[in-house]
Length: 326
Image 1 (cartoon, rainbow, N blue to C red):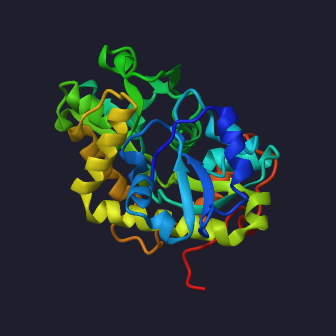
Image 2: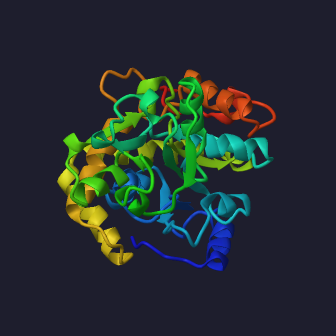
Image 3: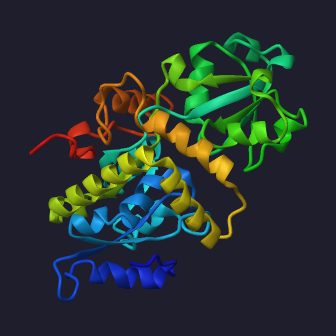
């Protein structure tokens, strides 16, 4: 099997072909695009492909390359891909706006979103952020805003781009970061972990799970069995990746090199290790792939309170649970 990097036109042609079985076999062709460039954040899907878990489930999967050039949600809306990943908060907003997406597997159970500060700036508790400048990603304001509101903080928010240079140069007292990515970038820049203070939103009652697996509702209703098999094969890929981290890193680094991405195995190892903690949190009773109702209502409730959605979508219509035995 091969991986393909396809133009939107070619993707559209594949969607037509997806309804047909592969010649001479019972495989169904589907296309899948993660929400960003190749990295260990998506290792489970790469391993599901490379180890033949999709084929074992009757699927000829094509993994397309995500990133800034293609919006996965837009491609899904235009029927150019069958499956994609996105944050839970993003998916709820899209459904409220009319794109009826269905969550067929909640991969990340514990939010990896944090605010990071320097202890040298005397910021060790939420109250110490009061009156400070905080770098915020424009598309991911919900959790920080809920955090500020919870502790009655007044902060000066500054739009944060892709780099952490503003934080490193002292332009903001706190920066937005993902534990599995930007936090490690700060360490690689020369800061020691004991110099940093990280505010994990999930530790402050604000667990907003991130990466989930999605398809369109009409596709789910048309062929729920295909969606179930794709989800189960993806879950198997994640379990294999965590059980065989060095093999998983070999695969991830091959995808990374093919995409000419500037990273290294050390960073990807950190990412895979932290993804393990977020996908399979220690002590959690939630099965891999299951969307917890309380997490869903927490995120949807914050979206509602902040005027980002008009109505909370019904949990049963939004989520298809494939984690329970049939």
